[in-house]
Length: 356
Ligand SMILES: [Zn+2]
Image (cartoon, rainbow, N blue to C red):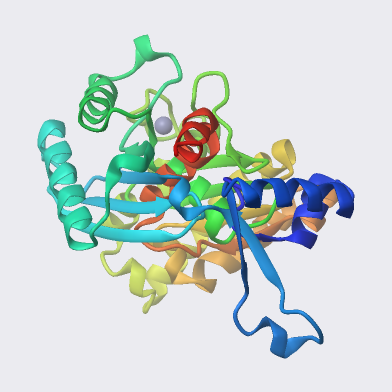
């Protein structure tokens, strides 16, 4: 329920494979302990006959999760309770060169501002999930200094577990929980923006891989003799389809008005489709979610993308995968921070929920 949010009893039965009687007895115990609450879905009685449909959720008083996105040009703070209800959200612009310590201060000021304005107490805070720009290796020794700075500062300020991950990966998780990949078992996310990144979500959880770089679709090479990339590689997808590269060739590419822009988008779509085909042949996810500004050009990008994808995937793979545009807005990574807390911090949440 931490991962999925509100569910009907029928959905719970399906997810857990428990019998109705067993499930009913467990739910009753947890309702009595006030770990869970149950409420009718408004308007549901109108559609069907008999009793209105109700959903069971974790008790909203059981704890809060704080999501922060320290983005390249924007800092976002979002607060939710364990019942998946978003209670406050705000953002502030920053410059690309804003130092990390200053970004953190801006984020903390924003948290103070939101909690005051919405009268929120953070005493029941279960954890903080933070998205940052750039790689976040699973091995702390290899982590850039900013990862430790962000973690240490926020742990000292809030006294709760702090989880830090790359913000594109967090957007992937948020899309899988609340967005275009909601309710599916496996989702591959690709973000086409000034940088190109991605993330892989399996069984409702962000898949890190051995080093924390699973789903780094932007650095798959599409040309072995191609352009050198900042990652040390050559011919990386990002060097061809990032907004930075495309806008250098046509500054109105996002409007897709002239033939040049449309040709560039078609070529970018084809390259992306080829890379996604290889990735999907490996992972065979249920859904591919494509976000970032470039995805907003719609069919100009998606049509050639789908054509290339179909051409280069195994039949069994492309018959079972759905390609779709991202559904969440600019707060996706901050929401992903919340999802990270809800999916990786069960011990902390249990303590919160059992407080008198
Ligand atoms: Zn690269």
